[in-house]
Amino acid sequence: MSSVAKRLQPFGTTIFTEMTALAVKHNAVNLAQGFPDFDGPQLAKDAAKAAIDAGHSQYARMFGVPKLNAAIASTFSKRFSVSPSTPRHLDTSAPFSIDPDAHVTITSGCTEALPATFLGLINPGEEVILFEPFYDSYRACVALAGATPKFVTLRPDSTGRFGFDEGELRAAFTNRTRAILVNTPHNPTGKVYTKAELELIASLCQKHNVLAITDEVYEHLTYEPSLPHISLATLPGMWERTVTLSSLGKSFSLTGWKIGWAIAPPNLTAGVRAAHQFLTFATATPLQHGAAAVIENPGPIVEEYKTLFRRNRDVLATALTDLGFKAFPSDGTYFIMADHSAVSARLGATDDRDLCQKMIERCGVAAIPPSVFYENREHGRSFVRFAYCKKAETIDLAVHRLAELGR
Image (tube, rainbow, N blue to C red; front, side, top):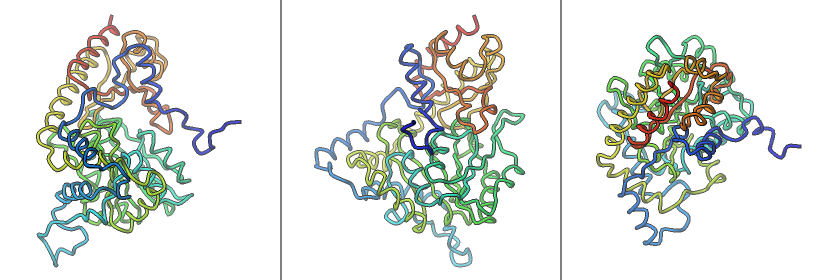
């Protein structure tokens, strides 16, 4: 008899835990799990330590330390040119102001913001549209909420960039659809959704009266000026139906701090908080103070990270191509996806999992088999995902080791 509840039995141990354990066992360069191998800004650490010394060690306010809520609200408000809820004939110039207390909820990473949103706003039996490949916790969140998933598959086009079929997306909306989850920039493909794609999603949400949940944890990590990050909530008519989720960890190399947030109008915030208060109640108080300090004064650090990641992406993509992989463009995030078919044929690997096992054992480099991010795993069996959010020397070592696959 299994001791795991039926709703979670299909998911097992996450692929990140599995591949990181194999990387440690074989002393492999870990390009599997998406965390940097360098520390975050000193400003954030100093502010967190100062908060501890100042006695900020008890529970924080349930929905966040005021200073952090204010910093996030100020940053997000700048994305709106005018309030989407204000008729243009009344006001055509005033910036839209996010209320830090009414609109912002601090969570224990985006990983907690996701189930808080699902549990607080989605009822059992309602449908949720997911794009696949998806970050693995999305599928589990749907199960926790007792909802029914509907899938729209992202596929590489003639340029290698991943996109969706408009007809497939339109068909996914039914009279039972409660929400659609959009992750941009997108893990694992590195896709940045275009304005046209987001406008189509927005029009369908409004037509069918559907909520949008957006995961924007890589919001600052885009690399192509022609493909900037756009928050779905800033499009006309979308603020009132969107929950925007993000976090500190990816942009500031502080993934272990688990500081996330949800931004939404009061009626949707009420649902998020209804669940959040019973999941974690509050997030680590001194770390919230540290997060506020670096969000208020980010300095050049994010641009420096972007320069490093762009360099790493290009070096890795070139090396993979030289080895026979087909590396797809990565316009954002930490990740690059590649088609491994030619390499697997040479190595005798049967699928993405087998290839990742062989890479660890033969050359000491760990990657992620992305078929686990698809409902129909056949769609992902020919792909492999590498993380490039590392020191330059780590990527160079991985490239040196990967060369063994060509010998």
